[in-house]
Image (tube, rainbow, N blue to C red; front, side):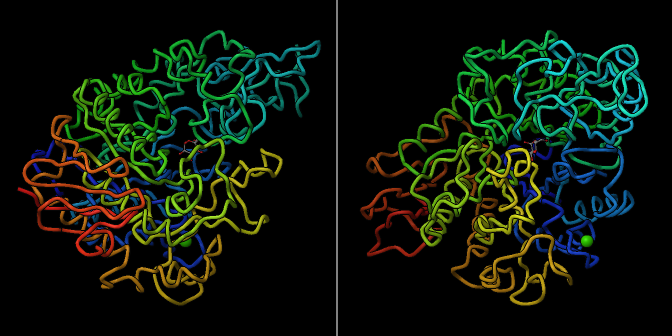
Length: 575
Ligand code: GLC
Ligand code: CA
């Protein structure tokens, strides 16, 4: 049976779950073509069960032209042929369930693919047609409509508008009855934004949710969940806020940033009030199956109060805590973000989540080894020097912090091996659209998507039998599962032990705001206790710290004379 966590009944399993993100393309290659696939995942399910996770979240596995690594979905009811088939996905779901692992899949509702049936039909249809109404088509500005309809920037660089070929219904782009229209894409041109004010769009996604719930999927991770609703007037952002928030998903263009959120409700596409109605509908659909089907939002909002609105009891079950991910390795900053998270979630009765890495951000071993440890999407600092030994020590400590906080945790494949960001991939292999769209100034996210090392040798360190789609650093041989298995001091062993303890200790699990009692062990120390009898101490500073009385259950590294050194954490059983 799936782990239900301490104090959580089966139907609210998600409140305490450890959810592991599988980025299919880079997890394991079952058929030897160098690209990860479902056969690879099926073969490694026992590994995931042993790791001690409760659920897998799959990054998009749908057929896709891969303009944005699958976040451009061409068919929401099928599996990308490179990855496998629908029948295989159904087997995978059943096999995972048999091992006590639930399945969350990505859903991408903000935009589709430019090769999806609806969009192909929209391009073929004239301006003003019913087909085009499902997207945001508009005439351009300027005498011949040669300028984009408004000033919105795309997250991967360039304008958020592309001119429609064939616009106006004429052959080969010639227009019949007017200049060619433009279509909106907040991401790449291959990802046209849906018009969520259109009933077809709402009905289509309701049906897609049911399609996968019917196949046993336990929930959805909702991509770009805060962006679906658009200002019907598509008004300019204007000079005061002509950019996106820096903490929104990847974008290449420089921009002013947080000004974009000065009055969030009025922003033309971020966090508009209308979006909540969509998630109320979705919650009803999920609940019509059972109360343990969940909805998880990817929402980048620095405003905790606004974020918490998505977690009202009739909306989403949880959201990713990106503020925690972005936080600098400094005790006051960490305490502050933890406090703010606990407060805002407590107010709506939601449980927080804690996340250090995912397929969009620089791996945290690398972040924590840099001089500047805070992370921002708008400045990934690829190539900035990083002390990987220091980063690894901090990553070990961060894992113990994360796993001891109340709520759910998200792991990104490979963090349990201590993988770093690969910052020197050959330019000709870079696939992230950011690279092209930024005019080759931003390398993008490929460095956290390098295939996993499973064995110490072989053409792809056990990833598959062929060379992998992105090359792995040779040093990863020593970070492979094979190399770390059974090693007392390895990252893998730390993760396995911590996840196992997290399940068995009554103090760990969902908990509540009141449940975290801060301890004052100095400015550079993050320390709290939880009932019954558990204490976490994390030393972020320079001097070793005297631990409070209690038995050390787990430590991220060796203690010096019973004291906790800098960049280390310990779990204690305290009275
Ligand atoms: C989300 C995904 C990211 C993708 C973007 C557009 O931020 O995590 O990988 O590029 O949405 O779908
Ligand atoms: Ca393959």
